[in-house]
Image (cartoon, rainbow, N blue to C red; front, side, top):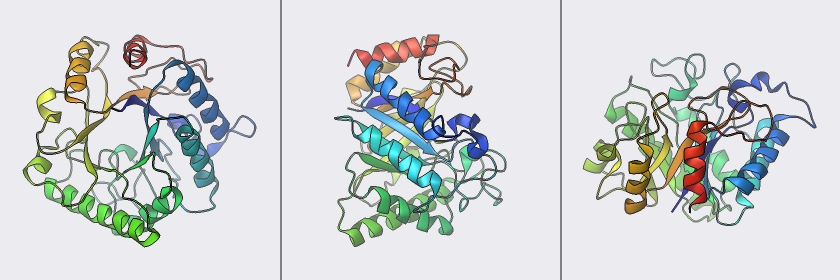
Length: 293
């Protein structure tokens, strides 16, 4: 069962806006050091990486040969070099995505960007990058539409994106990777999928909430992963019951967020601008849970 955390991409939750950090102290090397420290002490076996997170303007585009793509491929492959570790690669924002009102993705809240037909080539490029990496799961989006889209619109976009990924995998002769699709209301509502699951293999349904609510992530007929969870404010008292519940139900889960370069609350570690990983009260709770398994 997957247990782990959310990790920054090259933008370090906005700290490295514009990718101003220079080698040898650039975003890639910061992440590589952070990964090594995290794996040594926290010992997750599941990590979520959100591409284009807090990149603001310009929003990046995943394409072969770009500096961003090369660096993030190295980071994801480094995570995958640890035995038994799986990586959920989520497309949070991209120049081809749109905001709920149809505007350009990332000019307001990059958390709610929606894939468009123009995003098809991005999914194909992601498959090209990771088709032979069995530890990679593909996440279609982050919290598509926020609270500004209908269930039917989100479902149609998810169904289309999954079909694009499957077609590219088949063209490459690749096994079908797990694909995480998202729901409505910042993906806190996924029950509409339980009423009518997507007709593809190896699809999982991603839930986010602060704090998580068991009735909203528990379904008998669809597999769920909890892609983000944390406290609302500073109260972590939900955690004991939550951990017992997901262990009993064997639901993979990813805590938010391991981000030592910028405040990305609820933070698991203090902002120290290094890989020291000084835990917060929330971090103490999650670290103990991960170390216990």
